[in-house]
Image (spheres, rainbow, N blue to C red):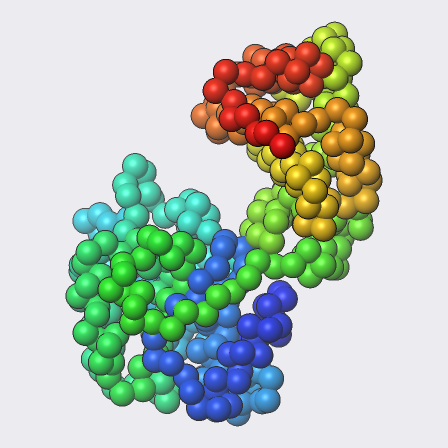
Length: 382
């Protein structure tokens, strides 16, 4: 994996390159980011660059024997650790290493749900167990086989329970030429003893412009589609790719029309709309609701006087401004978000979409037309 193959994150790439140029590589680093930002890829590219035989100023060469093995994830001094589902045949991470490599080669942008789908998870809980910790210590106690530096990349150390304390000594006093790169999503779920022994590298979400360019160039989306999907994915490339597979186009227009029908108390039209959306399929229904939640949160920003923070594209922004000026209040926006979040929760659990969307539609009428807020709504006073 070379830096040039990673989407965006130019500032982080320069930061990592600089640590090598200035010979100040911390032996234990935590790459902290959200899903879909490319943090795991950055860790791999960083390790590849460190072990590259013919380093360039801005990237690994991609041609030397070390780089060629890194590109296939088979370098003998590159070790991976990750959550897995233990069974009689799977005791440690290396027992599913082929599945891991296959997934990386297929598409290196993935999350825990995608990884779970590649394994026989059944109803088991994923974790990084004590046997895996002992195997890490064993592997890293050996000398580097081929490269200058042994590298352990641990994906999602949040899945380490208290057994992770067995790694503290080797992280604090590592064997010579050993590099630990932890890639995490949630700092609060990581063992504090582990966290205190690492240098944190914060990796931001992908910016909208980078995402839009990628979607247009690599997936052939129109500018409008790319703008909408970038907004809905909110910096998560995995989510954007899922949207390409599942999302019906023109969510912005459909959601705005849904609100208009609610405001006009057009019950017959709402019934027809409910019939249509019931046939979309569960993923499309979920994505439509997620768009609505995101849209209403942007309306809340407008209503709070924080227009500079709003990220809606042109036509959707105009709609949001009109709604915020003439129709919505903060309490109403909050109530609609609550209804949409509940609907999303129930759709995920296979609720009947026709009944569910009809109920939400009637709630929209009550909130927007008659300004009747559901019980339990948190009132916001200006």
